[in-house]
Every structure is written in C-alpha cells, then in structure tokens.
Image (cartoon, rainbow, N blue to C red):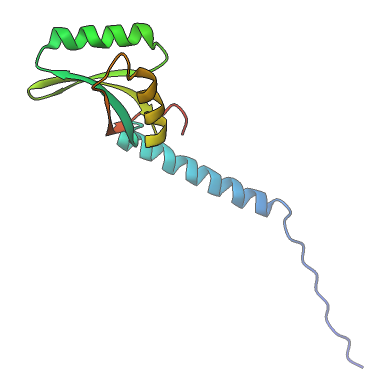
Length: 122
C-alpha cells in the first residue's frame, strides 16, 4: 500500500502588506523626484491682470491687487519688453474663470492664460 505525500505551506500574512508598502514608497519617491525636476510646478491657468513696459506701474497694480485679494497669490514676470502681473494658481480653466468674474470690475482687461502653476494641493 502506497501512502500519498501531503505537504502544507503557509503564506506569510504580511507579504501583501509588505509589497503594498514597497509600492507606495516607490510611488512616493517618483512623486518627490518629479517635484524636484519641475520645482513643484504643473500645467494650469492664471489670470493676467496687467502688462506694460512700466515696472513701477506693474508693482503698483500688484500691490493694489494683493491688498484687496490677499488670499490669491500674485506673480510678477518680465516678458520683454513688458512687466506682467499674473494672479492665482488654478488647475482648471473653470477655476480661473471664477476669479476672472470676481475681479472683472476692477480689472476689465484681465484674461486667462495657460501657465506653470504652484498648486497648494497635489
């Protein structure tokens, strides 16, 4: 009479959680590397409220905007020959449009532009 050979194995119950942890860490490292390479910026939209060759006037517009809308970030840029003031960091054009509607009375010539943005939430 031949008896069958029976074998048992145990799976490591922590194997799945270890693999998941390793995958999560790999994704975190990729995200960190991406932010190092892009300086934390991504594609998005801003609202251009001013552009002119007068740097003093651009600074005045930026200061006035910041005092009234202190929760919206402002950015000064030089695009030869103009000094440009852009405001906001919006992932979607719809978000930028909401700000545009809000400020249109004070800045009637403002318009939405594509830009590299620094979103607060990623």
